[in-house]
Amino acid sequence: MNILRTGILMMVMTMLFVFIGGALGGQAGIVIALGFALVSNFFAYWFSDKMVLAMYRAKEIDRQSAPKLYEIVERIAARAELPMPKVYVIPNPSPNAFATGRNPEHAAVAVTEGLYHLLDDRELEGVLAHEMAHVKHRDILIGSIVGTMAGAISSLAWMAKWGAIFGGFSRDDDNGGIALLALAIVAPIIALIIQMGISRSREYHADQKAGELTGDPMALAAALRKIHRGVEVAPMREAGPATAHLFIASPLSGRALASLFSTHPNMEDRIERLQRQATGRN
Image 1 (cartoon, helix red, strand yellow):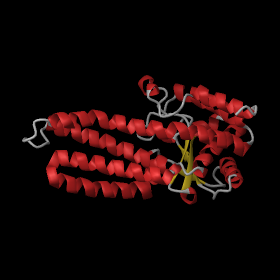
Image 2 (cartoon, one colour; image 1 turned 90 degrees about the vertical axis):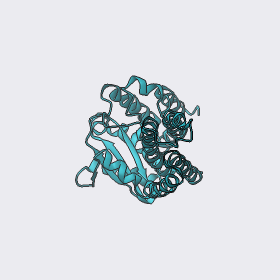
Image 3 (cartoon, one colour; image 1 turned 30 degrees about the vertical axis):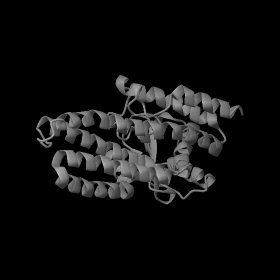
Image 4 (cartoon, rainbow, N blue to C red; image 1 turned 90 degrees about the horizontal axis):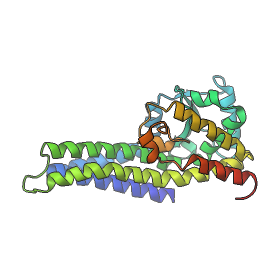
């Protein structure tokens, strides 16, 4: 199913590129936009994980540099019957974590310094089990591609806005400027809808799987409470809407407007589901 979704997302991104290319430059614009879309799809598939890790200045660790963190991931990977992923630490005080990569054989798990210092070992294991659940469910490729796609759509919206302002459309088409301005407004909304539709459902599934992997759903519930409070106090300033859906909790939660359009399900609802799982009421 995720392979089908990935293909559909790539087709949608290509169509948006081609549409704006045609609006800005006619047939020549379509050709250029199509080439750009193909290159973007190639990089989204092969390098989106590396781009995200670089964006957040994540540093890879090993057993010697961070033994506790490495060994927790190693233990969970063994329980989930998954290859050992690369492990990264993000130099940021905001508590959060994400997994990325194109498949379980090329996966990476990243946690912020804020998360590492905030949680106890039991809670940290719950969070890392959640991220390994994303790897198990093969959410990581589609999550990384959606992040790349959302960034590309934002760029397209920016191009459309300035194209409309400076007349970057056919003068024979009196509605060209209006169409481009409409696209500049609609494109980011499309990206947000895609992120919300994909991210919210997969977070519930990863929470449940994490509870199964650790045998302790309440550990993740306790961690989510701390993360929610921590992000409210110290949101990740470097994070943007394009990659917010990758994290276990929205890094934008400290921003009032962003919280209205969160890519993540309600935190209290997630905790309640974990409590039901712990008591066998699922």
